[in-house]
Structures are given as structure tokens and as C-alpha cells.
Amino acid sequence: MNPSTTAALAPPLVQRLARDFGAAWVTPETFDHWLAQGGDRVLLLAGEPVRFPEGQDVAAVLPELMKAFPGRFQIAVVAREQEDALARRYGSQRWPALLFFRDAQYVTALVGMQDWEVYLRAIDAALRLPPSRPPTIGIPVLGPGQSGSACH
Image (cartoon, rainbow, N blue to C red; front, side, top):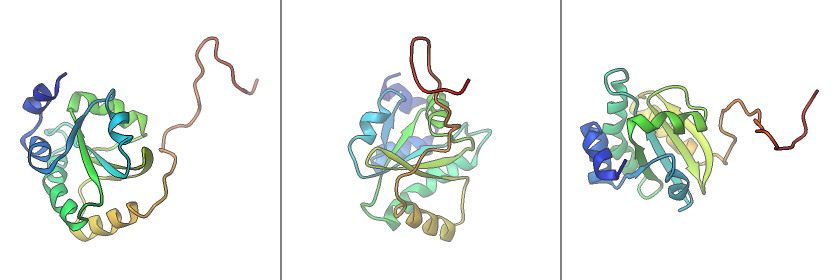
């Protein structure tokens, strides 16, 4: 899906993040390239707006959070129909979620809509945390013909 189609189908507050606040539109295919640009980066997984209306609240408050931490992180948004792929990749199981990355490595996630002071403390902490392992199951799956140590 091209970015203009994605933007046209996105909820207005998500469109606003890209249009007015510099959020990058990413897909599962372009996400690694966006991460590779380095620094602290935040991906918004807003969720389906009717099922998770607080995702739109997070989209509305995210510009204010960026102002509270000027120049500290870049943001990206993803089309709803592509969110699940990135959510699975990083073990995110709740919507909305803000996934934090530093220099192309996962750091942490903040889920749900938070009170302002909670957000400020949590984002400050996230920007100080070292990269970590995403909370996925973590059992490598090997395909046919791949080798690796395994228990029998």
C-alpha cells in the first residue's frame, strides 16, 4: 500500500501525526530502514479505533509528549492492517502501544493510555533504559534444512 493510500485510510489523529508532527509512515517492509536511521525512535500501534478508542487518545497526546522531550525521539505510525505484523515481531499484545527503540534495537513498550505524569516518568525512563530483548516467546524456529543445537 502506498503512503498516500495509507494516510487516506488512517484515522484523522494518526494522519495528523504524519502531516503535522513528522511521523514517518512505515510498513513491516520499511520499518528496519526507519530504525536504521539511529537514535531514539517510537512506533505508535494505535489499534483499531472503534475497538481501542484510547489509541486515538495516545495519537492526540503524542505531539505534546514530543514537546516535553524536545528532539529526543522520532516517531512512526503504521497502517492498522499492518500493525499486527510489527506487534507480533516485538511481542506487543495490547493496544495502544508505544514501542521504543534505540539505534535499531528494541528498548521497551508503554501500553494503554496513561495520565500525563505517568507518561512523563515512563518516557523519561524509556529514554534512559538500555536496549533489551523484545518480550517474544524467544524460541528460535528453524525451517527445513537449517541447523542449530536442539534438545532431543
